[in-house]
Length: 275
Length: 266
Image (cartoon, rainbow over all chains, first blue to last red; front, side, top):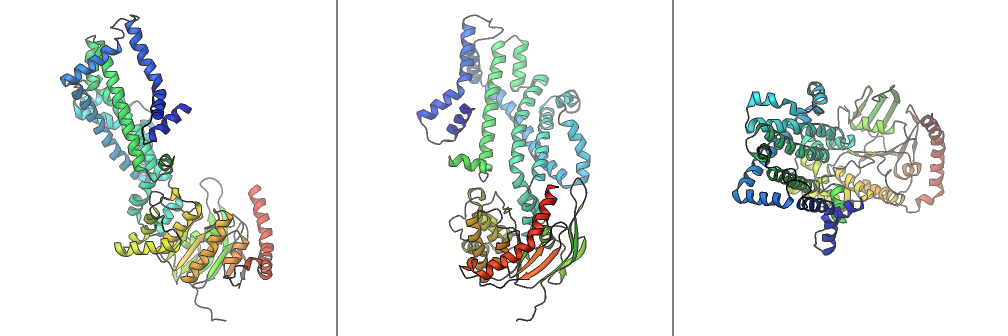
C-alpha cells in the first residue's frame, strides 16, 4: 500500500530526481524479479525451450519481428480493431445510457436485456457473429463493441441518475431547458462515472480483440500467437504475450492521463497537482 | 406607516404531502397561507422537518403544487423561472465550471451578449468579494467562498425574488455572521423580495423584517412577527430589545423544536 502510494506520488511529480527514480524502481521491482527469475531458470535448463523459452530469446524474437515490420503490422491491426470497437461502444454506450435515463419506454425495453447481458460471457456469440458478419474486421469490431458497451451504458445511467437534485434545480432556475440540462449539466456532472465506465471498457476491448483474433485469425497479435502455437513456436507465443501486456499497460496509462485532464476541475485531480 | 402594497407572493391554503419512495406519505405542510410584499425580507423560521424548505421549493416551482395555490405577481407558479433566484444550503454549484463559468451560466441562458455578460458577471463577482478567484473551481474554494459564488450566480440573473434555503447553515460561525451582514448590504443596495429559510432564531431576527414561525410536522404557520431594528448598528446583538425579541421567538419555537426532536427520535 505504502509502495503504491509512493509510486503514485512520484508519478505526479514533474521534476526528475534520483529519489523518484528510486521509488519507481522499487515499485516495479516485483516485475523485474519475475523477469530475472524467468531468464535465470531457463538458462539453468530447468525448462525445455519448448515449454518456456528464455526471456532473451523472446525479446530477440520481438526485435526480429520489429525489423521485418511484422510487429507493427500485428500490433497495429489489433490496436485498430480494439480502438474502433471501443470508440463505437463509447459513443453508442453513452447515447443509450442517456436514452435509458430519460425515457421510461427505453428503460423498460433495455433493463432486462442489460441485466442478463452484462454478466453473460458474450464471447458465446462468436460462432453466430461469424455466420452473420464473416471472419474479417466487421465481425471482430462488432464483437469488441458488443462486449465493451455494457460497462459504458451502466456507468452513464448511474452517473446521470446520481446528479444532485439541487444542481439540476439550480440549472433549471437559471434557464436551462431539457436539452440544455442534458448537455450543460447532466453529462458534465456524470463525466467522472462515465469515464470510469470507459476505463473498464478499454481493457475489455483489448481482451476481446485478441480473443477474436485467436479464434478467427486474420493478422493481429492474437492470430500471430495462435499460428505460432500451432507451429510449436514457443518464442512466438511468448512474444505475443509480452507485446499485448505492454500495449495494454500503455493504453490504460493514456486513459488515466486523459481522465486527469478531462476532470481537472474534480477534487481528485486538484489534490494531485497540489501535493 | 406606508400603505400596504399589493402582495408579490401569495401562498394560498397550501397543503403538501411528502411521498417517500418507500413507506407512507407524510403530511409535510398543512393549510399554509402567507402574503409577501415586494422588497420585503421575510424569514421562514422553524425546527428541521417542519416543511419550511418544502414551502420554499413550492414557491420556486421545483415541486408541483397539489392543494392550494401560489401566485407570483398574480400568476400561478407552474415551474422554475429566472424571476425567482434560488440559493441552496449546499451551494449546488456546477463543479466543472470555474467561479466565472458558474456566474455566467444564467446570463448565457438568458441570451445576454458576450461582452455584456462578462461585464455583468465580473460586477457580481466583485460584489461578493471574489475578485482574484474568477478562474478557481468550486472544489478549490472554502465553504464561504462557494456560497458567495452561488449568491453571485443567482444575483447575476437579476431576479425580483430571492429564495434562500438555509444558505448559511453549512458555514462556520464567523463566516456565517460575515455573510449575514454582507447579504443585508447587498439587499439594501438592490432591494429584492427575500424569503429566507432558517432554523436559527438570532439569524432570523437579525435579517428579516417579518418572521413566519412554523410548527413541527405537519408544518403550519404558528405566528407572524414583525421586527424593526436598525440593522446597520454593529452592536445590535447586544441591544436589550434585540435580545428580548430573540428570547420571545425562541420561546415560541422551543416547544416545536422539542416536539420535532421527539418525532425524529420516535
